[in-house]
Length: 219
Image (cartoon, rainbow, N blue to C red; front, side, top):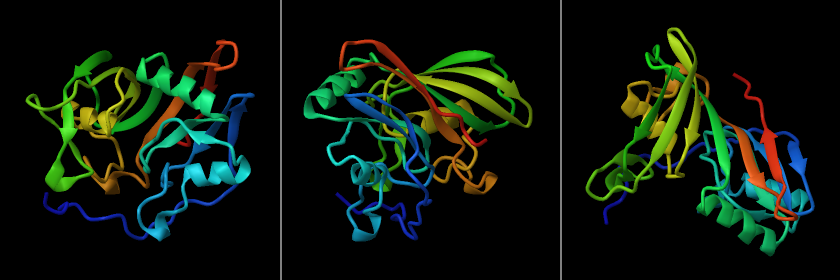
């Protein structure tokens, strides 16, 4: 397998600041990940700073449940035990967890709402990029609602599946790439990727009550 043609992560300078805890329970901890911070450490030592490491500095028993792209901000959940990690992981796997993202995209989106059903696979020569492929791609489904439109549009995105870069590729294929997307659009259109994991709804591993956690974006 040949080396990726896409440039490696360089000049990694994640934003600093205190850990922002959105909600916590006996079995979970929800925090806000800033844009520009890795969810998990990279292979190189200079990429050790990440959301997982910062959370574990404050709560050593915390365990990763899911990830967000480095450029994406918003709600992340961590488990506080191995049992809670299994419970929450199954919720993601079985699509019990409900997710809502907010995105600013290029252009005026004509549709008030819609559904994108395009299979995705890794673009191996250019990894970590993903691409639509009807032969080998895994099914990926995103619903969207247009909240406002002008030269730019604000969309609420509801991923039914959780493929890598799903929302970014789907918005590109819709003809409205997310502002600031250095992979699938034009980085210079914004100072950061305008994609934020705004809301996460899941069942508390202790007792099963529904928990909704909201994080408001800075855009």
